[in-house]
Image 1 (cartoon, rainbow, N blue to C red):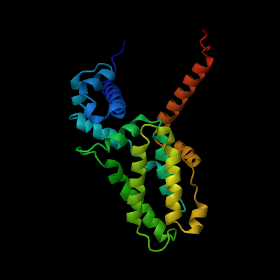
Image 2: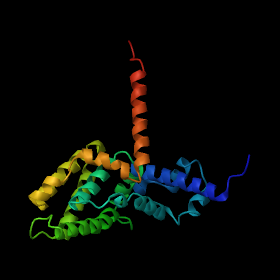
Image 3: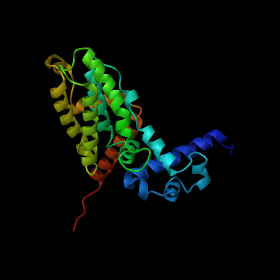
Image 4: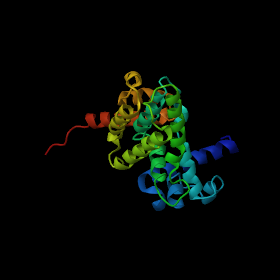
Length: 237
């Protein structure tokens, strides 16, 4: 058998460790996850395999958090507020299905580490810029401060993420309600009438996301499990 190229082997180890770490961070958080657990789930790899790629568990966790950012999946739209709504609902739709996003959301709310707050530190300035554009385009009601409302929007999203972690299936509906209230509060009537604010909008946007493959793989897996359960004969006494 031909020997696998070094670069390919390194990439395979990176992917295995990264996936294992994301799963464990999602399931039990940063503090309870050990390097040994990560390596065992990655296929009983050596400690050197991890430390050749990341300095320590902290750096590995930070890479998981950074990977989750999906703002680059959002295209600028008109009205500009549509882009704000899109960023919010797409993340809410993807979260229940994409492990790395769930892991990143959890890590970003664990205090005492550099990645604490990454979610809102990263999203808030981007949302603020979008809302400044919206103000300049006449989409916002008079007197609103874009930066303040951007922070409020992102903080409210994070609060919903925390609230629904035990039942992530309800997150998208809750974020949809949040978006509707925020649009009502900040948008002019003319702008609000043009916006698509629904969970369905989030599902449409999945096709633009870098995490779409992971999403569809998860969905297909769930469908197969349901079909398998349906095909299993009911137990009889």
